[in-house]
Length: 310
Image 1 (cartoon, rainbow, N blue to C red):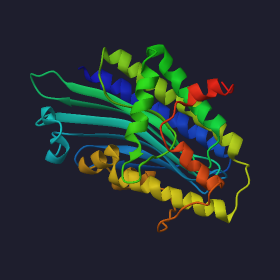
Image 2 (cartoon, helix red, strand yellow):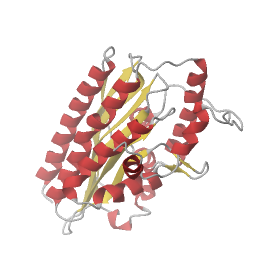
Image 3 (cartoon, rainbow, N blue to C red):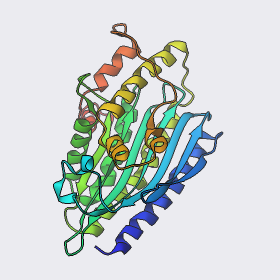
């Protein structure tokens, strides 16, 4: 594969980072993103941008990274022996938003590209990414909006794409030790190299470009909803689940650490505050108890149609 393809992806991702930061800072209305560029000794580097103590976002980050090297470490090639002995480039943008108001959901997303090459052999490449929503006090209409935008992003690529990647998201962002999903899902795809490079790249762009349309309207709806100490305590407790997933199950976190990525940027996804409580059970019938109904895979768009809220 010609390296101009890698250059095209890199340029798109740098532009996406700019647009995400501009849109999210405008939605916050108070804080700005601070930039921190870094270099990786083994090859590559990145541009981390963090927003803190804003009117909406207690902490958030939109990170660009492009790391490369002569070969991947054995820990990263154990499950993919075809990558052994190949040089590689991994380029991506990842983002996570932790609002202060417990009524505003946390959200995460990323889009990425990986290519590994070896003289005399065809390159191995794929795209991956997606976005997901983690509410603490979920609102059905917000979840439906989120999935409508996700489905619309997938629609030009075939009717089967949204159900496939929606299901993959439900299955990937699942805390097996808690027997619950991390949130209400969205889209997740990985190892995407079916068809042409151009088709796969177009899908990655459709996903990345749709995030602000999916998330910002929910922020605007919920940012002024009242909250107090009880809601804050529950939010911090549920943030603990977010930490558990990222440290126990998330493949992206593991790959980043194994491949020598910048630890500060990789762990940027962690919330600024979280708490754990032994054997906590919310009061039956409370808003906190209602969250459990949302932490299972559901066909949100079919439910909206059936309820007349489509």
